[in-house]
Length: 260
Image 1 (cartoon, rainbow, N blue to C red):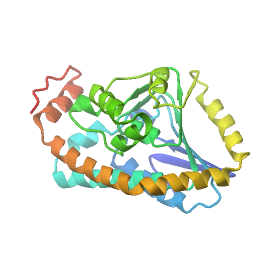
Image 2 (image 1 turned 135 degrees about the horizontal axis):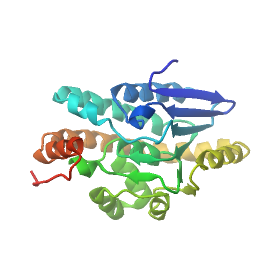
Image 3 (image 1 turned 90 degrees about the horizontal axis):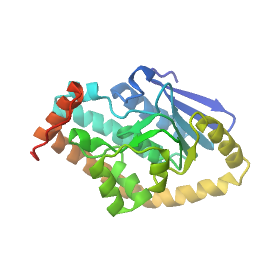
Image 4 (image 1 turned 45 degrees about the vertical axis):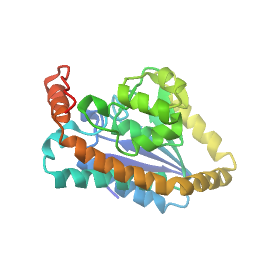
């Protein structure tokens, strides 16, 4: 299958999925969201692939959702469709019968960060810029961000990280449990390659059985969270704070939120 914004390569029992919008720091537009959903649907049927590496081309893993897409999707119906694409993408990814590794360099923000922390392992370089920063434009996390943050940090800490929207480096994110392994800058790919070799020389079928057991138990909860994120995001899209956040971002100035 040919894609415009992503690339999928098979290497024996390993697959590598590359986000390929380097000119936009791999920000996810509507085309990428749909292609990711299609790709994960395809991968769900792959019986011979046991490890999937997810990475970004160019300077970043992914800067998150494309702001231009948000500006252009003024109609509620348009945005609802985008949120449904995100939900499908996340659900298919969560059910993949393979071990998933996020190979992070540069920015992994917003929806890009939600996707990274949904992986079984997150390997990030020291000076990566990691942020659940939806709050900066008056939105809540989507892409299952609430679910995966809670899984990794617990609810109290997840709330605080989401509310602050702080940009973290690899070490800071690791201390909070959001990153599993920190690699030196420029060495994430080498570290991941060695990690994949170790996984593929392990009794990986037993490991995958454990993943399936845990994920099947939590699937309904993830579905509920995604549905609630959709409702919350549609609600927040209509607030004055969101409009101010987007305007301030485009104008490159600090936002002035009013709690409205």
